Length: 207
Image 1 (cartoon, rainbow, N blue to C red):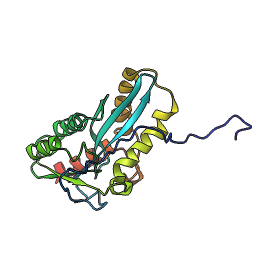
Image 2: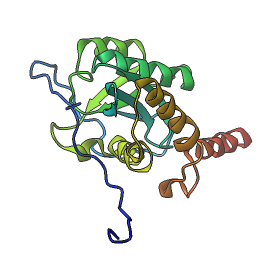
Image 3: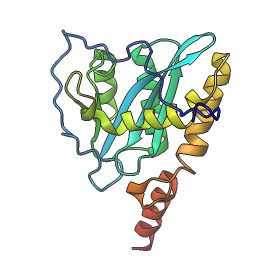
Image 4: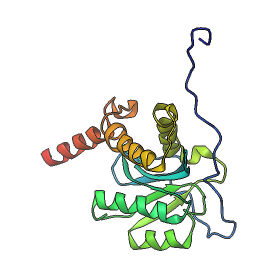
């Protein structure tokens, strides 16, 4: 391949740490046990934070993903790794889904943003049950980790991003227009997350 000028695309491995555990944080159980899809929408939401390299410095992307449909229902991008970026992503998810009649499990890793007192208050006020995996075990949050792999390999790492503004606009467009509405998932029968949810809603209305 190299003689012919062809090179494979591989994920970049260097970046700032996005999971920093707080040793003084309250104990939060793992309510998911790697069962991210329970067969219904709004039962389990998963979340994580990843870094985005730009020519002006790092950005941090937080996303909230429905465990059943794989749809990214909330996301936010910030200049710092503050809990606010997670809260903003959750606010978008709640606005999209509307009032939640039952408690939704909100699962993430043990990063200090997810175990903070700020997020604990937000979760109580919005009917969310916090759940976290084990420290350093990526498989305990594999659902959202797979989203980052798709984002980086299929889109973000294919080019350089000179400005933060350009990166913000492009990532938001990719999430909403490509990942949610065009990218097919084998687990969904080779349709997109939005189409999968539309079919669920159509079936419910016809019943």
